[in-house]
Picture 1 (tube, helix red, strand yellow):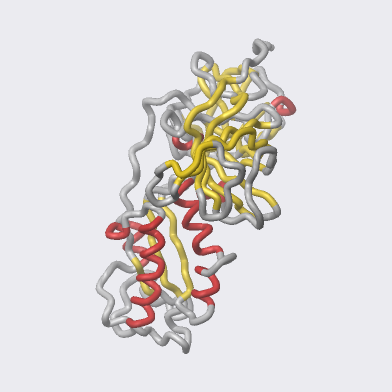
Picture 2 (cartoon, rainbow, N blue to C red; picture 1 turned 180 degrees about the vertical axis):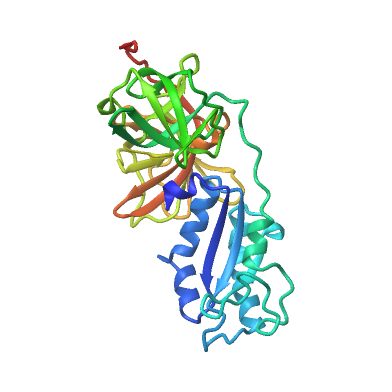
Length: 339
């Protein structure tokens, strides 16, 4: 979910209108809030909310139940920073296909908004950041007979063209792009949003892996020795203290990082500093903290590369916190070896 959301231009939040199910999803431990929090922090700019299971006998296409769910979900989406006047709340039923492909006037005569398909068509795409240096986090790397090394990933910023020399960090390997393919078709260039495979010359498959990031030789991806993040704690059984070492998920990388310093505790709603150098930060609170990756990791500041400046903190099989990178200290890398 995190990898997907960190690459998405729009999110579809499906909530159940069924009595009991909706309340469980939005309650403590439910995933409705967790997924919305993650979508916000991972930079999904627009949302569509589908209030599903309107056919359930406890709902029976009731406008009152729709309004109740809409108010509850809308309230907390607004609380975490979404502009809810721009979010369609669509009453749907997968079973009866209500308001999916087209509006279903006979089942929900009281609803006059778009169907789900119409809402998806109305999504405004964010502008593509092509003027920034190339950043392409790798999802996977293949070695293909007769072709060679083929990394696969999604262009987040910048443009990639055949003939370009690119450097992969953290392994610090440089090679030349021979060709680019998307959906088995060769492309003259790749732009942000393109999921591509590209043939790279001069680098072996064993030198690259998921979580590595490709960039231009003259503006390579940043490997952080440490970084300061604004971190929002969503759920944690006790509290986060100095020394805590969970797994940080950023773009396609997953690296254990240690909380080295808790710099300040913030009020989640106003962003005001509540306490300097707190001893601990618990669920529902925010902080500025300094994190140290236990192995080389590419991460960028949120203001320079929002796509690579967001992260989720996972531990014990759950998302403990989410955050953005405010500043970082570059790690000095050994000189790249050319083949």
